[in-house]
Length: 224
Figure 1 (spheres, rainbow, N blue to C red):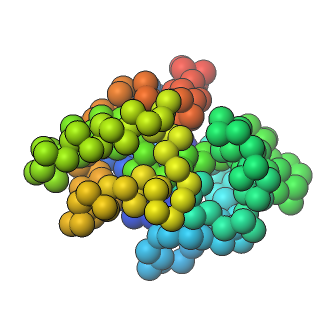
Figure 2: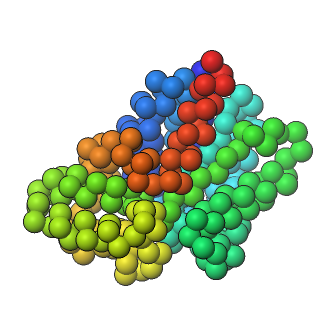
Figure 3: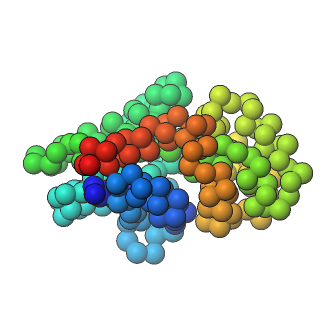
């Protein structure tokens, strides 16, 4: 069974990897776990690339038989991150790939003897909450307010995919959800809603998320 470690930016992402993605991939022959970026006590939010790079490098060096990925939001990512400034000028479907390739290049330039296939960064467009728009009824159920489901669906229908929902301080997925549900708490409500939605539906609605998941599934298939 191939092992994959995801370097993530917050507690919600770590829980999502542990409780939602890991069980699914375990059935595919992949052992997935998550490491929170930075020192113990880090609470998530914007992370410097230096901290993420150090963690990725350490894992690649110490875990020679393990693959390393990431789960960082495009929204709120500082422009000092590799590729982030350039990605802001590209079309939607090229943004995440631009940053992912730049991250990989920046990390591997300092490592001469590492198989580059062991590192496959993933950038979430535009943030974790986009996945929750894959099925708006799930969040309205979790928040116990079915009246708002229409508003959630209206937002979803503005875009080809939830991954296109705006990269903006007022219209990013989490800001839209917070506007409808002042009591929304990402680590609790977000995870409950993601479990209700199911991975199958999230990957159907979110192409880039599906590509990431498919790549990890293929690691299990190749190992078998």
